[in-house]
Length: 96
Image 1 (spheres, rainbow, N blue to C red):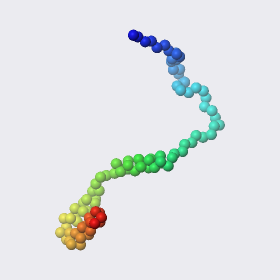
Image 2: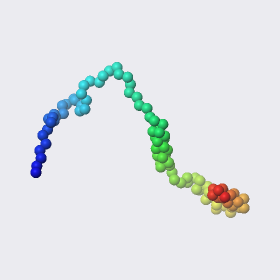
Image 3: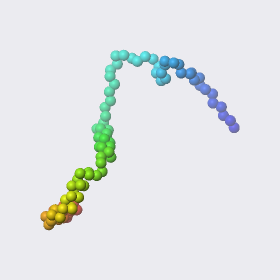
Image 4: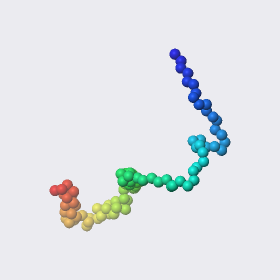
């Protein structure tokens, strides 16, 4: 079984100097167009910008890593005070 489709309107070739999709002159004197964004859209845009900043930021702060390596390699740095402070911070992080 074969089926034929007849054209309803014939296609016209594009004419030079005429843009497709526009039929007529622009109307002058109309009010300016405006848009408004919901607060949810603004929040999502801010979240998107924040995530882009996070994704482009360096994962490792080389300056801090070098500073901490120097402190750890210094035998006078690790003492009872540092060990107690570190242990307290770990306990606080776990809520203990």
